[in-house]
Image 1 (cartoon, rainbow, N blue to C red):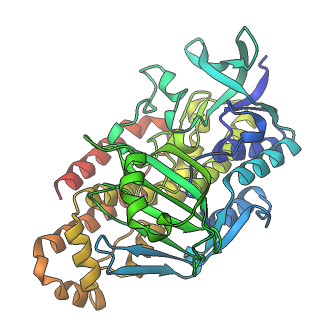
Image 2 (cartoon, rainbow, N blue to C red):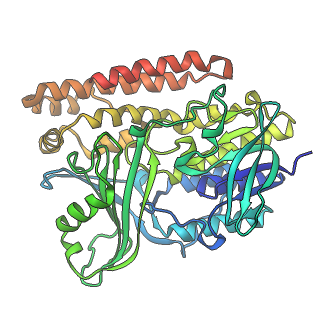
Image 3 (cartoon, rainbow, N blue to C red):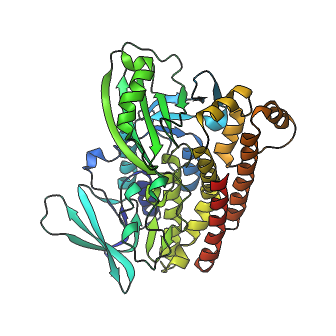
Length: 457
């Protein structure tokens, strides 16, 4: 006998949605988080979410509409700003609409939904170790704040939703097909502040701004996300490449002097740092009795770092597949495999293609970005299409004429064309994701060939 059907370690958006989904289907679920209960949901974040994500969650698990009390402001578009600040691209339309929200309130709302469905919550509790029985995951040891001895808690399925650290994932045996360690160069570090700006008015708080500068934030960007006319979430993220600087140092020495409103009177609501994976999802999100969700599963958009939507989707799909496995009384890797196929089809395919685009962006200079914006080689609609579908098309017609206009930089144009082909190859590979664990190794080998080609572009 086990103590629970499922134990979820980590009450971020992915973990809570997993627990909620399972409880709604009648399973006994324990949700553990190291934070005090009233702080669950407090996390360094851009605090923005595209509207299509909650719509999908409503369709999958009946997630209620996000309450107005959580929403700071409605978002209608995004401005992408070139390093020279003289050119920008506007991304707008129905597919870009979303909300700027209060991250803590969102976390507390999701937690309340889960508890209402019967999820047991252990807050202020540190999960320390995986437990194993006959070589398979069987539970966790945890320490509740104030207790001298650890508790051993068992379950039929353990969900690692511990965030970018993947604390439980890293304790899996070397024989597990799950990637235990993420390459440091696939991790993004970030710093952000939420500020009241009594002396500055944001005239278009419905438009978010993303500023590219490969010298300051390689592989990342600076964001300015208004939350009304006198409030803003401003921050930056960059990949942890060799010799990278700390994000707070860049915030203090680059962001503060460069943005005029940062020089006026400001009231600091919150300032904090964070980390997130920036790559394709983990190649398999399951093993026997074990599931990955959220940042622990690398369920993050590799280009803009958005993780709230993908992690909630991952949580819902994990909950659905885990529920089916529990009902069948079989929680082996084969029985849980449907979570892989569901996630890879719905979001992983786009994520993987964008990972190739991310590799390409690392080699692009500020001068090339300025050139592409100035010549109109890249339109807002192009980048919007890439971000939504993971496809970058460089066909005939208008795009061909735009490419001709950029003949001053033939090598760059050839690279754009080549990366477009590699992104298409990656999408084809993910459309052929294995239907069972036995074909995973062969499938993985195909991935590495595309990555090697992308690094040469």
